[in-house]
Image (cartoon, rainbow over all chains, first blue to last red; front, side, top):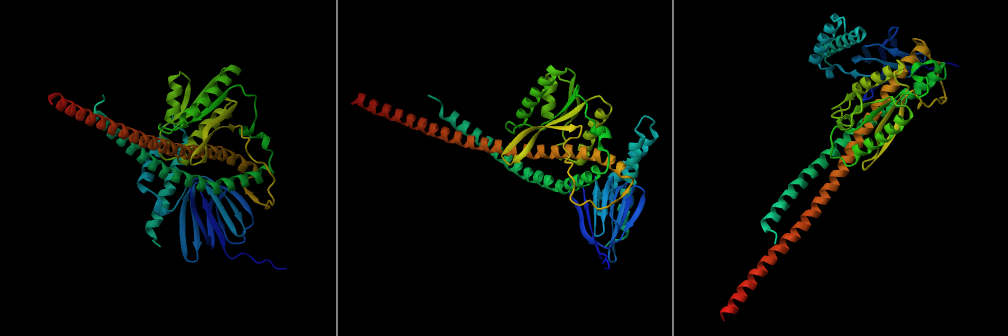
Length: 141
Length: 287
């Protein structure tokens, strides 16, 4: 008996506020808690938590990005389900507010009274958002 | 004899009130639709979350997590979720009355007691009555966001894990339908509402990091989500209640206008009759 590997993965990205993505894709790159990981069709079942970072997914030649904050992903051979607190397409990101958040976070990091870890997370989040937003500007579909 | 002009003025005033209530009803209906959509959008997330939690719960020793630890309830924190605005029928009053009942009961049992308030109406009420309102979130119902829920949940989980409170309860209006709401008291912490059922098929997952760590990072999210859901329910219920209240107000205004118009006509007719009688009896006197 031979195993037929699935050809595509159904990627679904959900946040509590909305469904962000529900598409068939060829490849997904996720910011796992132990490092970035690439998922191709036929991946072994995996549950992983996600760090703040960017998700990259490919449909044929078309590559798209998402900025995500904390979440987790369930990977199955033909399906990737991603639950995140926040997930944004590059074109949805408000760069101005991300820059402001970055400055706020940097200020907090210099303040010895402030919650260091919260500030660090905020900074990381802001940086990822800026980075992902820049990708929309670079490579218009 | 009442003045005809006064009655007409009164009718005008009721008419403009009616216009306002009608507009408010329409606005509430539109907002209700959006609030209902938000509840729907939250569902896939909730379903997946519960599924994954369940599959993890079967693998880990779940008694050890601090958010699951049951303690005797000596100090209890009550989170009262009301609306920021009034004019929505019994919406706020029902919550406040219920919360007051719970507080009175708890006060007799233990004594140590504080509450958190979400929504301006509840906060104002309890602050005026010298209750300790520890934390308050006001003005979030303009648009309920997940971040708000996150902030609230962090605060409550913090209290609980530090042992400052032994249990956390939410009181809010549950959205039953556009016209009916139900006040519910729900225990948020320790987490009890988890349906720890065995999922039909547990795929043999790899876990990154370990299953235990995953479970531990998921539980706080579960708490956040419960808060988020309560906020969404309350928001939808509020718009529903306001819609019903304004519908009633509009109907009452209509009835009032009808009665006033009838009365105005009667007064007008009486005035005419009186004048006629005066003219006729004057003529008779002369003749």
